[in-house]
Image 1 (spheres, helix red, strand yellow):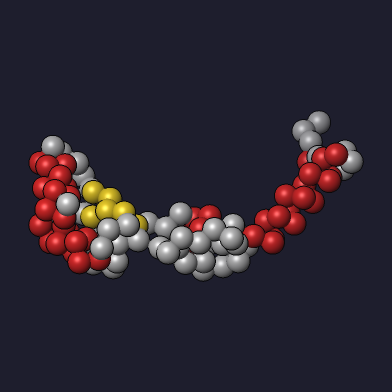
Image 2 (cartoon, rainbow, N blue to C red):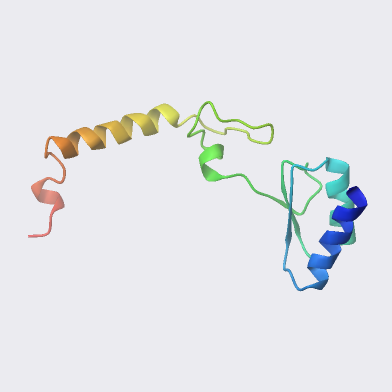
Length: 106
């Protein structure tokens, strides 16, 4: 299957792709694919031997504290802050406190 992924990656490059995403494959395979390519490889959970990395912003910010696949690192813990903000927004809308006069075009 490793040889097949290497061949498929090369075929994508030859077909005109500008980059290839390698997701959740062994680091050694990601490195081999990267070394054979003339176009960038972008890794998701495939080690740091690719040309770039992707991490979903919500995962990076820790928006879902219980969602953490192996390849995710929370660089912040915003879950509670976001939950508080959304609940506050909801309450102000329900009580017709938002939008206030200064937030409306007259």
